[in-house]
Amino acid sequence: MKKSMTAVAACLIAGMVSAQIVSQNIVGYQTIDMPTGYRDYTSTFIPVGSDGTAIRLGDITPVNFSGEFGDTIQFFNLNGSGSVSATVTYYDGYGWCDAYTLDILDDMTLPVGTGMFVYSSQTDVSFMVAGEVLTDSFQLNVASGYTVVGNSSPVAITLGDIVPSNFSGENGDTAQFFSATGSGSVVTTVTYYDGYGWCDAYTLDLLDTMVLNPGDSFFAYCSQSGASFTFPAVL
Image (tube, rainbow, N blue to C red; front, side, top):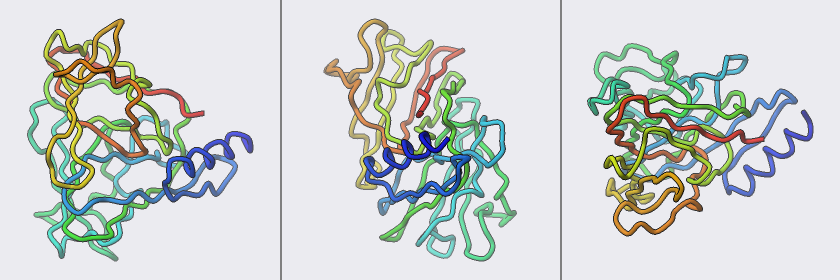
C-alpha cells in the first residue's frame, strides 16, 4: 500500500493539484480550483469504505462558493433528457442543500464518473474533496441523450485512456469541453472512431493525448442506447 500511496501523491503533484494522502488505505483529500463562471466538474474521491460505485456531494467542501452569492451546481437527469434534476448550493455551517427548498442534500450520490455543472460568481473559488481513492478501472453506463461525464480520479488521465462503447462519430455522437476560463463557451468538440481513436469532430485531428485533469468533465451526447465509458485504473 505504501508504494501505491507514494504513486498517487507523485501523480497529484505532477498534475499541479494541491493534495495530500493521509493514510495507508489511500484515503486523502484534494483541492481543485474553480474559475469564475461555469465549469463541468466531477468529484475525485469516493466515500470511505464504500463499494466504489458512487461519489457523494457531502464529501466536497467549497471555498468562496455560497448560496448567499447565488452560486449553484446543477445535476442533469440521468435518463439523458438534458433536463436539470436538482440545483444545489452551499451554506457554511449548514452544508449542501437544495437551492430552492433548502433541504439538506449532503448524502446525495451520483454514479462514479458522472459530472455536474458548476456556476461560481466569486474569484478564488476551490472545491476540497475528501474520501477514498478509487484505484480500479470503472465503467459508466449512460442513457441515450445527454450526460456529464468526468475523470473521477485524483490523477490526470488522457482522453485516449477512456474507452467508449456504442459511441461513435458515425452516429453523430459528441463530447463537448467548455472553456477553462469559466465563460461557458465550448472550446473543443470531440468524437470517437473505432480503430482511429478520439478526434476533433470537425477536423478529425487525433486528440487521444488531450489531458483530463482530476475532476475535468465533458458534456456527452450519445445517440445510441447501451453507451458506456470505461475509465482506466489509476494505480
